[in-house]
Image (cartoon, rainbow, N blue to C red; front, top):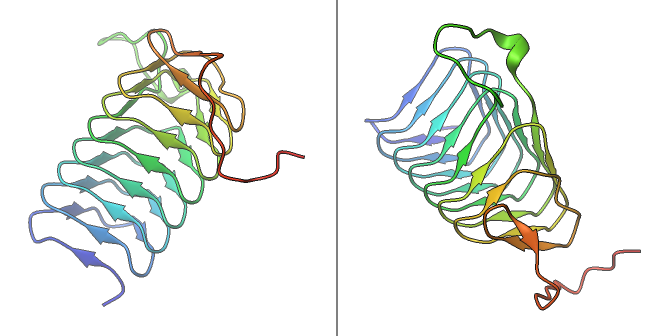
Length: 164
Protein backbone atom coordinates (compact mmCIF):
# COMPACT_ATOMS: atom_id res chain seq x y z
CA UNK A 1 0.00 0.00 0.00
CA UNK A 2 1.30 3.42 -0.93
CA UNK A 3 -0.21 5.19 2.11
CA UNK A 4 -2.42 4.30 5.09
CA UNK A 5 -5.98 5.63 5.32
CA UNK A 6 -8.33 4.89 8.20
CA UNK A 7 -11.66 3.50 6.88
CA UNK A 8 -13.54 6.56 8.22
CA UNK A 9 -11.32 9.02 6.34
CA UNK A 10 -12.38 10.40 2.96
CA UNK A 11 -9.82 11.03 0.23
CA UNK A 12 -11.51 12.49 -2.84
CA UNK A 13 -10.61 11.28 -6.30
CA UNK A 14 -7.83 13.43 -7.72
CA UNK A 15 -6.04 14.01 -4.40
CA UNK A 16 -2.38 12.99 -4.47
CA UNK A 17 -1.02 11.32 -1.33
CA UNK A 18 2.68 10.49 -0.93
CA UNK A 19 4.12 7.14 0.05
CA UNK A 20 4.27 6.40 3.76
CA UNK A 21 1.69 9.04 4.71
CA UNK A 22 -0.87 8.12 7.40
CA UNK A 23 -4.39 9.58 7.37
CA UNK A 24 -6.40 9.04 10.56
CA UNK A 25 -10.06 8.96 11.61
CA UNK A 26 -12.75 11.28 10.22
CA UNK A 27 -10.37 13.26 8.03
CA UNK A 28 -11.43 14.68 4.65
CA UNK A 29 -8.92 15.41 1.90
CA UNK A 30 -10.44 17.17 -1.10
CA UNK A 31 -9.76 16.69 -4.81
CA UNK A 32 -6.52 18.18 -6.15
CA UNK A 33 -4.92 18.43 -2.69
CA UNK A 34 -1.29 17.28 -2.75
CA UNK A 35 0.30 15.71 0.31
CA UNK A 36 3.93 14.62 0.38
CA UNK A 37 5.67 11.50 1.63
CA UNK A 38 5.80 10.33 5.24
CA UNK A 39 3.26 12.78 6.64
CA UNK A 40 0.88 12.16 9.54
CA UNK A 41 -2.58 13.65 9.17
CA UNK A 42 -4.48 13.48 12.46
CA UNK A 43 -8.10 12.84 13.34
CA UNK A 44 -10.79 15.23 12.12
CA UNK A 45 -8.55 17.19 9.75
CA UNK A 46 -10.00 19.03 6.74
CA UNK A 47 -7.67 19.66 3.78
CA UNK A 48 -9.27 21.70 1.02
CA UNK A 49 -8.77 21.39 -2.73
CA UNK A 50 -5.46 22.62 -4.16
CA UNK A 51 -3.73 22.68 -0.74
CA UNK A 52 -0.06 21.68 -0.99
CA UNK A 53 1.62 19.86 1.92
CA UNK A 54 5.29 18.90 1.70
CA UNK A 55 7.15 15.83 2.93
CA UNK A 56 7.48 14.84 6.58
CA UNK A 57 4.72 17.10 7.91
CA UNK A 58 2.79 16.33 11.08
CA UNK A 59 -0.72 17.74 11.24
CA UNK A 60 -2.45 17.11 14.56
CA UNK A 61 -6.18 16.59 15.23
CA UNK A 62 -8.98 19.02 14.26
CA UNK A 63 -6.94 21.21 11.89
CA UNK A 64 -8.57 23.08 8.98
CA UNK A 65 -6.41 23.91 5.97
CA UNK A 66 -8.19 25.85 3.23
CA UNK A 67 -7.39 26.45 -0.43
CA UNK A 68 -4.44 28.80 -0.86
CA UNK A 69 -2.27 27.22 1.86
CA UNK A 70 1.16 25.74 1.12
CA UNK A 71 3.07 23.92 3.86
CA UNK A 72 6.65 23.20 2.88
CA UNK A 73 8.57 20.16 4.22
CA UNK A 74 8.75 19.16 7.90
CA UNK A 75 6.04 21.46 9.24
CA UNK A 76 4.39 20.75 12.61
CA UNK A 77 0.78 21.92 12.94
CA UNK A 78 -0.65 21.56 16.47
CA UNK A 79 -4.19 20.48 17.31
CA UNK A 80 -7.02 22.84 16.49
CA UNK A 81 -5.02 25.17 14.20
CA UNK A 82 -7.09 27.06 11.61
CA UNK A 83 -5.76 28.51 8.38
CA UNK A 84 -7.94 31.16 6.72
CA UNK A 85 -7.99 32.12 3.04
CA UNK A 86 -10.27 35.17 2.77
CA UNK A 87 -9.62 38.33 4.79
CA UNK A 88 -13.16 39.71 4.42
CA UNK A 89 -15.49 36.69 4.10
CA UNK A 90 -19.13 37.04 3.15
CA UNK A 91 -21.63 34.22 2.81
CA UNK A 92 -23.20 35.60 -0.35
CA UNK A 93 -20.15 37.01 -2.14
CA UNK A 94 -17.30 34.58 -2.68
CA UNK A 95 -15.16 33.18 -5.45
CA UNK A 96 -11.58 32.02 -5.80
CA UNK A 97 -10.39 35.57 -6.55
CA UNK A 98 -10.87 36.35 -2.83
CA UNK A 99 -8.19 33.83 -1.78
CA UNK A 100 -5.03 35.25 -0.21
CA UNK A 101 -2.28 32.62 0.08
CA UNK A 102 -0.44 31.42 3.16
CA UNK A 103 3.04 29.91 2.84
CA UNK A 104 4.64 28.11 5.78
CA UNK A 105 8.35 27.61 5.13
CA UNK A 106 10.49 24.56 5.89
CA UNK A 107 10.68 23.38 9.49
CA UNK A 108 8.21 25.84 11.04
CA UNK A 109 6.02 24.81 14.01
CA UNK A 110 2.55 26.12 14.74
CA UNK A 111 1.19 25.71 18.28
CA UNK A 112 -2.22 24.36 19.26
CA UNK A 113 -5.34 26.45 18.59
CA UNK A 114 -3.51 29.11 16.61
CA UNK A 115 -5.25 31.00 13.82
CA UNK A 116 -3.25 31.92 10.73
CA UNK A 117 -4.76 34.86 8.84
CA UNK A 118 -4.39 34.71 5.06
CA UNK A 119 -1.91 36.67 2.98
CA UNK A 120 1.20 35.91 5.05
CA UNK A 121 4.40 33.88 5.06
CA UNK A 122 5.76 32.08 8.11
CA UNK A 123 9.54 31.81 7.80
CA UNK A 124 11.81 28.76 8.05
CA UNK A 125 12.00 27.21 11.52
CA UNK A 126 9.72 29.89 13.00
CA UNK A 127 7.64 28.92 16.03
CA UNK A 128 4.08 30.10 16.56
CA UNK A 129 3.02 29.90 20.21
CA UNK A 130 -0.17 28.09 21.20
CA UNK A 131 -3.30 30.19 20.74
CA UNK A 132 -1.57 32.87 18.66
CA UNK A 133 -3.42 34.86 16.03
CA UNK A 134 -0.90 35.45 13.24
CA UNK A 135 -1.81 38.52 11.19
CA UNK A 136 1.57 39.42 9.63
CA UNK A 137 4.61 37.68 8.14
CA UNK A 138 6.85 35.88 10.63
CA UNK A 139 10.60 36.08 10.06
CA UNK A 140 12.68 32.88 9.85
CA UNK A 141 13.95 31.46 13.18
CA UNK A 142 11.57 33.68 15.15
CA UNK A 143 9.14 32.82 17.95
CA UNK A 144 5.86 34.75 18.10
CA UNK A 145 2.90 34.47 20.46
CA UNK A 146 -0.25 36.29 21.50
CA UNK A 147 -3.12 38.07 19.79
CA UNK A 148 -1.98 39.58 17.55
CA UNK A 149 1.14 37.41 17.45
CA UNK A 150 4.33 39.32 18.23
CA UNK A 151 7.95 38.55 18.83
CA UNK A 152 8.92 38.70 22.49
CA UNK A 153 12.48 39.94 23.03
CA UNK A 154 12.85 37.50 25.96
CA UNK A 155 12.07 34.47 23.80
CA UNK A 156 15.07 32.76 22.34
CA UNK A 157 15.06 29.72 20.15
CA UNK A 158 17.79 27.87 18.38
CA UNK A 159 18.04 24.53 16.65
CA UNK A 160 21.76 25.05 16.19
CA UNK A 161 21.01 26.06 12.62
CA UNK A 162 23.11 28.79 11.13
CA UNK A 163 21.10 31.79 9.92
CA UNK A 164 23.91 32.98 7.67
